[in-house]
Amino acid sequence: MNYHTPSNFSDASAIASSSKGKTRFLAGGTDVLVQMRSDIITPDDLIDVKKIQGVKDITKNKDGSWTLGIAVTGAEMSEHAEFKKAWPGLVEATDLIGSTQIQGRATIVGNLCNGSPAADSVPAQIAAGATVSIIGPSGERIVAVEDIPTGPSKTSLGKGELISAIHIPDRGKNAGDAYLRFIPRTEMDIAVVGCGVSLRLDNGIIAEARVALGAVAPTVLLVDECSKALIGTKLDETALKKLARAAENACNPINDKRGTIEFRTEVAGVLAVRTAKKAYDRAQGK
Amino acid sequence: MMNNMHVTAKVNGDEVEFLCDPRETLLDVLRDRLNLTGTKEGCGTGDCGACTVTVDDRLVCSCLMLGVEASGKSIGTIEGMAEEDTLHPLQKKFVEHAALQCGICTPGILVAAKNLLEKNPDPNEQQIRYWLAGNLCRCTGYDKIIRAVQDAAKEMREAS
Image (cartoon, chains in turn blue, brown):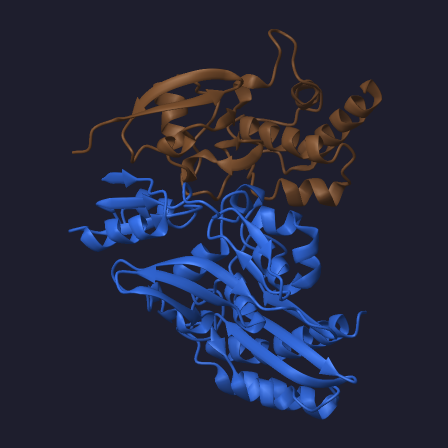
């Protein structure tokens, strides 16, 4: 295995493009190292991106949006008071992943690129309307987070392509986000169902809504029908019922030891309601 | 096969140099190259926390970090905890409270608890339990560990 530490993204992309074998990018390593140690993957070229300038930065842009470097860890996000205030749901979702030790290394871009449908930070990223910059052999492009995962452990990134930054929009006024997951214990587990919601209100009425569900389909889902159930309402009982139905209808889960199809589907509806209430409270400044 | 790479880092405040295969984890390097066998391997997949060390004062599982990634970093292990023959208050309280049985998880728990008390000298029980949620102990049932950390924190607050 060749270990590379490129100093910029074009070099990182060039190494991956010209590799004749398996490549992996290394940021926090909390997935890649587990896969290497359990012989799921033995990369010929391992490309450590942490020596690239700016990868540890959390930047608030002039327009109020945020840019996070690809090696920013969960712990660093939780410790950033201003970012946490702007996007509490995204920070809480990230903070649910693993232990203190994992938080010291794990990154949300890694969580995205690992392609797990149960990745906790991904529904929150999608609800937030986050996009990523991708650098590859044919230049740079910006893609919505929901278009990255294509199936369990699969992404739409091509050979030689890597994410160079993640962008989170301006929080705006009267807006809030939240993420909740169901696990059968209180800590250190993988989501049976996860739900991220981000809302913006106009005079108390929901003007914009994004709802994402995790662990109920081969990829994390952005559910338009859930948004439709919420927009134009004050989150009344009718809206909540429609939201729950829309969330249940979007589910295409697996049966496994963590939960049956029926259980995951029902929990998706319940969680969507709870998460929407939490996001709504936050949007009202509660 | 890849040639070994040359790495310079700090371990417990001392400059160290080592050669390692890029596939070797920091845990392998600590134990097999630097003979610092206080850090233990439990699961080897980042679940149990037995291999916990600090890297630039941040807790990590040394089984989930490559040795080559330690280049230029400052690593803290259990060997850096006691000063000569004087145990750290946490170590002393673990002995007093019998907060260990087989001892495999103990170095990781001590390193993690020390890191917590540096950030928060007066954590409540819930904060300690969440902070140490990534350090599994199959012997003690955790209560003695929590009490030892609380008692050490108290002693350290009184001493400062």
